[in-house]
Length: 584
Image (cartoon, rainbow, N blue to C red; front, side, top):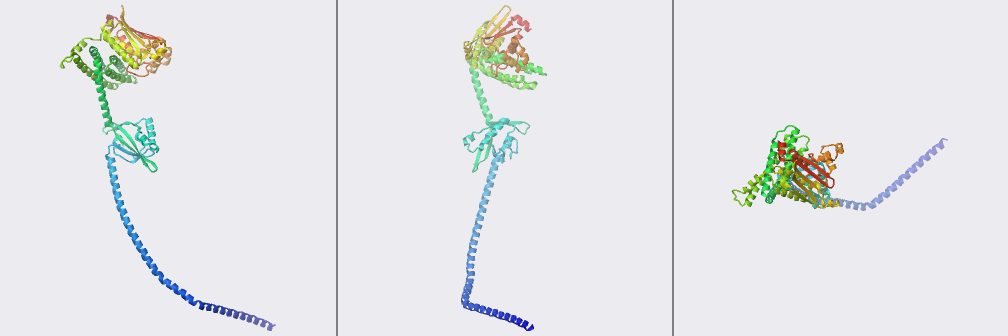
């Protein structure tokens, strides 16, 4: 058993040795083959190594040349860059200096310009830059970022300001032509009140102009220039006033030359006396509202009479001034409470009237001198002295005055009517001035309210030419003045409406009024059916004045009318002895 086991082990060891020797021999053979191949390739490898070594020697030389070229190019580039930097620095300094100079010039312009300048953006807000003149114009300094509407707040009515803002918004409407842009003037000559720093306020007139600044993307800003045109406006007003005065002088001269000297002198005397009465009434003391209203009524009646006389003679200068005086009086009458301060503006109007009257008198003297052919040292006093000796117009002059007034009323009212006068020669001298005033007022009423336009008269089957008739006659018991027209008659419903509007009656009271009571409203102060105030109607004081003048003489007035047919006024004046007793 042991001999078999050993043989087997030996066999195994022997086999392993054989395999090992075989592997070694194979490795030797392979190594030998590789050495033989290496030996065969040695020359070729030596050639490649030599080439690599040569190439390695050539690369540093080439790289050194490239580096030298690159360094030279870099140096040139750095020199060029340095030169460019120096040039740009010089140019920048030059531009900055120019910009500083431009800003300095712009600042100087904005500080010294007489006009106001500022920028507006699309939201209508003011930019940061603005001229110093704006502070002087608007009395404020906080313009930057201020809304344009805030700048004008309180200077324009809200509705006008909103409309102006809409108009200015059109400036950003790019298709809008420049001509239409230049025509935008939402304010005209804007009048403002600015504190002058002395506890008072100055009135200034400003004019706005708008200029668009357009860029590549459209309208960028709007440059607004504001000019203070106060001096120009005042000068224009002075020129207009001077022209008016010149025209007034010419009109006055023509009027004086066309009026009979005696008639004109009598008018001047009567008007001056009336204005002296106005002055006396203004000086009367009053404390309560009722006393002030009594003064006001007296002034209204006197001014109404003066205006009527001037209008009848065609003396427009006096009539217009009296009308403006009348405007103030009626404005005061509408106030809820009166005080002495309210009457101060009336003094200025009175002075204006008196000054105009003096000018007329001087002109009358000169015209009288020319007519009489007198020397310059004694200018035509003959005619004036004759006029002073007569307290009222003769009958023929009264008729001329009334016919002249009728002619003017026909023209102004665009109506056709003829005036028929009878019995004026029978008017007593003591009643002549009163009757003249009554007839003037009644004639104006007929022309304005009574006589219808020609086309209306045709539709009513009437003659196109209306008839206004006045007759004065002496009876056994009194004097009677009858005045009538064939016009539309009294519009009683309109009278009631006017009285309600003036709070003189209520709607309920007016509804219960009979015809007589309704007609009586015409004599109440302030009642007028005229839709607008004119030189001849609209105040509602004319017929009140008629009633008061008649009552003062102890007379009576009776009014009758037929709608669409006529209006008749009968006035009874007492005989002279009775009148004197009544007045006493």
